[in-house]
Image 1 (tube, protein in one colour):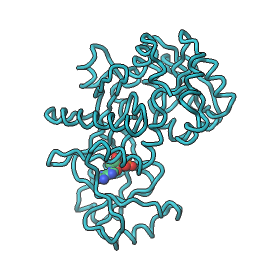
Image 2: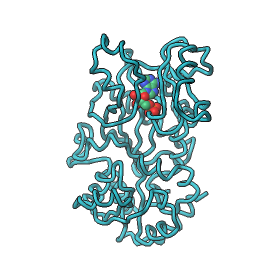
Image 3: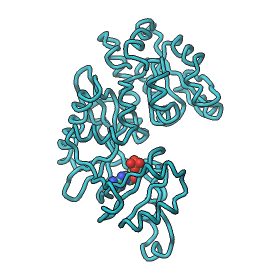
Image 4: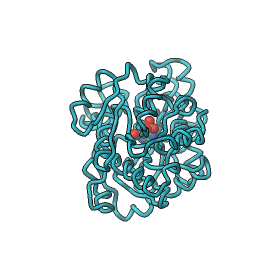
Length: 357
Ligand code: AMP
């Protein structure tokens, strides 16, 4: 395992005047490169051949290293080059998915913004739930056995979020039939989770926690547009009932949203509880951006079902700032830019070690 100490040793040899903000060319790379530019840093993207042409077309991108596949990120020669170039990596959704939390823990020697331990907690459902419970958040009821199903449930599988064969069921019989018909590998079928389907409004708030000032900010909020479940809502129910469709929850886009203002204090408390719980579970806890996937019920209760401990794609809506970030900052503050601001302030205060692992 790569220890925090190993990373600090590498970081101590960095020439901070030549620091490069680096990530994989995908997901939120455009706002991260623009954020680096706005905060006075050079940036560097690792791209596959296909992505390289696309990203080179943007003037905010300073430099591109081409790799054959995202796995090459772990090659010694790639890592050595990044360290030589004084790169700090910004983890995003594609980065974590392509490189993998285990590889990041075991093999990645390049300094990463935030606490890399969070990647293990956000990618493992059991750990996520443990984190939620420690933070006293409400979570959907989980059914241990299909025989217990007494309401609408969502059946989930590990792997790609929302895409991997999720289905809805109202009874044990329906569960067994749908599981049998499902076209996914048998070993994955066995790893099902049966979760109460919570009816309400989904919200995906984008938080940013700065350990430098112990400050928690709400930078924005979105609702994910998921195909084809959201598209189905456009088909009247009289027609829907004649079509055999098992809706899927594959994210295809994001739409902006604001929360009833009277609910914002509760939301901020919830975010703060997660930060404090993370400090107890995996020291020094979550650092920088994180996002909770939640549903607000008609009783105005937040039920949380997932967490991402890094920048999320919904922040791409707010490259010029959001309703919330515009109140906090007198300048356009995207999440990518906020990350780079944190790095800049940490350098000014000689505290970079505290926000990097
Ligand atoms: P996930 O893979 O957990 O992020 O879930 C994918 C999508 O399924 C979410 O964005 C929601 O639209 C929906 N979803 C997940 N869990 C629940 C739940 N317990 N109740 C209702 N909808 C859910």
